[in-house]
Each structure stands twice: as C-alpha cells, then as structure tokens.
Amino acid sequence: MRRIIELIAAELRFWVMAVLEEVPGVAGIKVREVCLRPFLGACGVKLSIGRRCSLLGLRNIRVGDKFIAGEYSKVYARKGRISGGHCLSLNSNVMISADVGGEITIGDHVMIGPNAALLTSNHGFDRFDLPMRDQDCVSGTIRIGNDVWIGANAVVLPDVRVDQGAIIAAGAVVTKDVPAYAIVGGVPARVIGSRDKD
Image 1 (cartoon, helix red, strand yellow):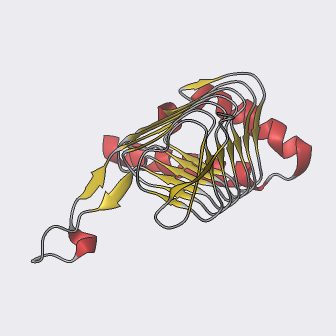
Image 2 (tube, rainbow, N blue to C red):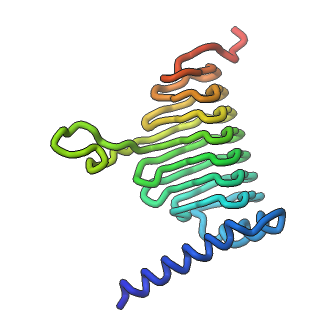
Image 3 (cartoon, rainbow, N blue to C red):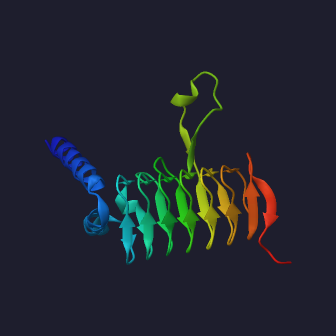
C-alpha cells in the first residue's frame, strides 16, 4: 500500500511540474519561482526559470542569487548534486546533468550559452561481453570557477575543472582541465588563446 501511495505522489509531482513548465510570460516565471523555491536544496533571491524548463532532483540542486534558466533548459540531479553560485545564467536548451551521480559545482557570474551541456556521467565501455548501453555508468565531477563563459553547443565532460575567467568556445568538447583565463576550442578542446594580459 505504501508503495502505491509513493507512486501516486510521484505521478502527481510529475503532473504539477508539467503544468508549471507551460505557464507563459512573466507570470509563469513568477509562478515557477514561488512553487519551486521551497523544494530546492537552497536558493538565493531572484530565481528566474523559463518556460518548459525541467528540473529533477530539486533537493539536490542549490543555486545562489539571480539564477536564470532559459527556455527548455534541463537541470537534473536525482542521484548527484548540482551547486550554482550567484548570477548563474543558462541560455535556452542548456543541459546540466548529475542525474546518474557525480557532482557539478559552478562559481559566480558564469554564463552558459544555448545548447551547451555539462555531463557528470558516461556509459562504461570496458566490457566486450555486454553492449555498452547495458554497462554501468561511470560518474565524476565538474568544477567551474567564477566568471567563466561557456559558449553555445559546448560540452563539458566528467572529471574536468574549468578555472576562473576561462572561455570555452562554441562547439568545444572539454575533456581536460582548463587553466585560469585560457580560451579553449575544438574537439577535443585545447588552448587557443588567453585573456591574461601577460
């Protein structure tokens, strides 16, 4: 009986979230702020969540002041943790996922361009006796420093640290750490410039 009640409660939460995602305009942004704030792990002032955004694992999501998530963005942390600093801005259709495990920590004043993805897990592929889709996922961590700009369509993979002031060019796939104030681009991403004046 308890399991049935849990399933019904989960289904009701799903439907409430689906309705909240559809409310348009400024009124929708305000309704989502009021309804989601109590369920987030932590939340500063000025929460702005666009239409058709999807947030899963709310208790494992912590954001600072002035959090903005553009339309269609997805922030998933059912089995992992996501922490965002102040003035974190996600453009439209951004995917931040620690859904299968792992942890993402994002500093203050970070901009993430449209269609970018931060992913803490990947499929295992070591075994040959099992299809890759049936192998366990491997989770890691992603650390993004303060004042970082992640360009459109960029992908940041597990076990990567992006230090303060770095820029990740549009379309880059980041598989290794990025030094402070570096500009990286390409697949896989490599240093192509620097913001440092020295």
